[in-house]
Image: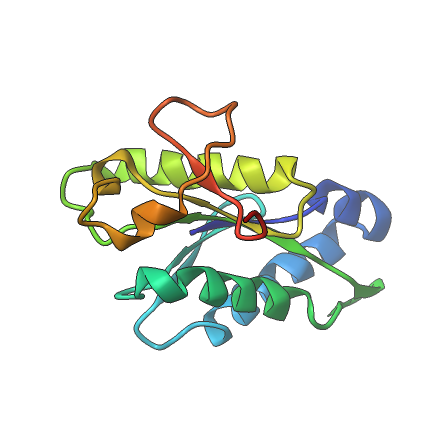
Length: 162
């Protein structure tokens, strides 16, 4: 799952770069406290973070991602310039079949889902299912709803759609 702090440039512009650094540090503390001890969290550059929900059942992944998103925004970050409210969007790559894809492609697919979350109005989670996982044997395949504007190998799920 790839996540980003939304409108982070405006945090730096409004509250200053020291406050922006505090927001990054606090987010780096909040995310691990929102996941299990068997999950992994890391900053992947700028205001983006990578969250690996290790051995997460795909049926529960969206709910877990939503919990993480909500927890990150629950309380404004206390900074030297005062409290800074933050929100995050996440792109969730949903699969139990990783062996057929290189890491770079997995990250790119999570990025596409993150772009879809930003395009959908931000402060949300969007899902992509890798091409290799879309088969009748994969129960998550039933969740796919084509959203267009992404490469042919990606389709995004909107959990609010029927």
